[in-house]
Image: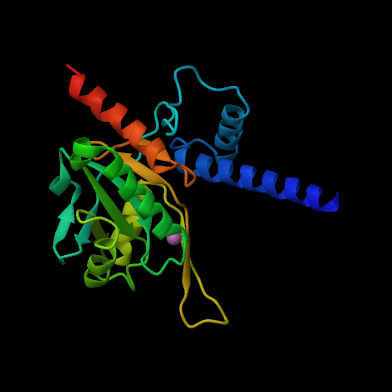
Length: 229
Ligand code: NI
């Protein structure tokens, strides 16, 4: 009985924590975190806004814009900005190569989603932006991303460039030092972003979204864009 109570309490904490993180990511400029949290909580418990969200992907609330300009360095050492990828759809993830579990899982999911799209998947570029530029040099990224997908792009930069890119996507990250180990960890939020040809986020996916969930939303977005006047 006690075990059940503990389990339920844990589930509630995870649910509220996830909603809090989502509210933090998607809140409007000027909207307080408390208001955003209340809004997303209402969404979660059925008071959803009409017309949203698409199955498997989270639609950004009205007036919220994520993504945009960045200035980074790719895995070949070349300085790049969002203009180098204008017109390109991306599945983008912020993580780091030393991540023990979550990042490899998410990057594997992203690669599988692109493969599941078949020929349409060739229009989508998988991208890892590191939040650990100190260790993730271009060479380190090049080796790492090639393990997940032959076309996967790895982006790094100065700590300032990385922080600025993360800010535009409302990505949380922080270094975690461990007394018992020489290598530090990075704590970070874990959303996969579908980025449109204008460098703006069209949809985002929670960590529990599978390759088929992501592929379905990407297919819908690309099809909608292709048929737009
Ligand atoms: Ni990670």
